[in-house]
Amino acid sequence: MELIIYKPSQVLTFENGALKVLSDVDIVIKDGKIAQVKKLSVLPKNIKIISAENCVVLPGFVDSHTHLVFKSLRSKEFFMRLDGISYEQILAQGGGILSTVKEVRETDENELYEIARERILSMLKWGTTTVEIKSGYGLSWKHELKMLRVINRLRKDLKDKITVIATFMGAHAIPPNRSLREYTKELIEVMIPQVSKKKLAQFVDVFCEKFVFPPKQAEKILTTAKKYGLIIKIHADEIENSGGTELAGRLGCISAEHLNYATLTGLRLLKKKQVVCVLLPGTTFFLKSRKKPPVQEMRKLGLPIALASDFNPGTCPIYQMPIIITLGCLLYGLSPQEALCAATINGAKALGLNHKIGLISEGYDADLIILNTSNYKELFFQLGTNLIRSVIKQGRVVLSN
Image (tube, rainbow, N blue to C red):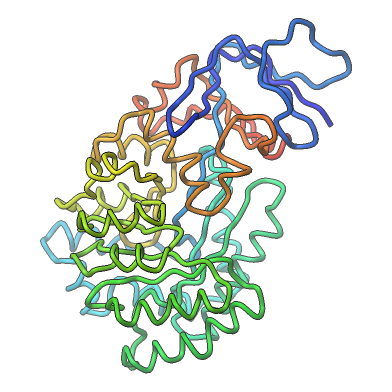
């Protein structure tokens, strides 16, 4: 099957991490791949043509960090934080992750699937064509397995519309009535070997903070994951400086996520291994965090920066990537060009997919968005307005607003 996107006002792609705005080009798609990006002097006959006049075409958004399999939002905690109660205090009172864990354990697998499916389809309407989903609200093998089954059902059932990537994050919190030592032992000896054996996830993530999984335990978990052939990620230095960034660099994680309290020493270690810095401005916004990732130092070191939603029930209910990229500019000081790169090709890099998605270039998957505007900068300014006209997944129009 062939498809031509004809006469767009702007086509956005990237070269060496820099935005390239192409004009006066058309896009030829064949067998789900981008075949040509050039001006066509003559339009072939008997080929489907999509007119993109007065529109912008860009790669589909890659949301490389979400926790979207859960039952309900924890809106009550938003008002607690407005009253000055900290994340750690909410967790100590049985709220936070642990309250979601209780709900997930009590919810039927099919119900979790249907709720998550609707969320993913909503993301698609806002231009997300690839989404990573972490487990971590089960905190026992029985319930983590339930979450991973849901994620893999979503991956199979929605593969024609959106790419779903599974991450095992049993190391998200310490479950009630378990010690750090015994739960870490279960993760290492039971859960990770089973995840690998059953091919339930491609990645393993751990929440490395002193009050959750300190670096010593996080290293044991991630080293075990590597031994079993899984690719490692880490939630690092979100709440305090815990040494998570340094650990990510030493172990060669594919990505380190949050990084609010990352040190220069840690960032230099990330640079040596080309670890992707996945930044999550929606969470910074909702937690009213004064501390922000050291973007200027990342920029000076030439570290790849990705933006993701961190969509979750308690600290970020935002799943719309256009809002996330605007927050990346407003809160972190990213330029619009950096933010677009961060939400596409660098998001793909955080998932090891930058060889096939995230660029408009010959040979890449035709995962594309058409915006209902002639200037890409409107995407940043019109916060909350959905400018997505069409979403194309591997050469097929899967959504048309």
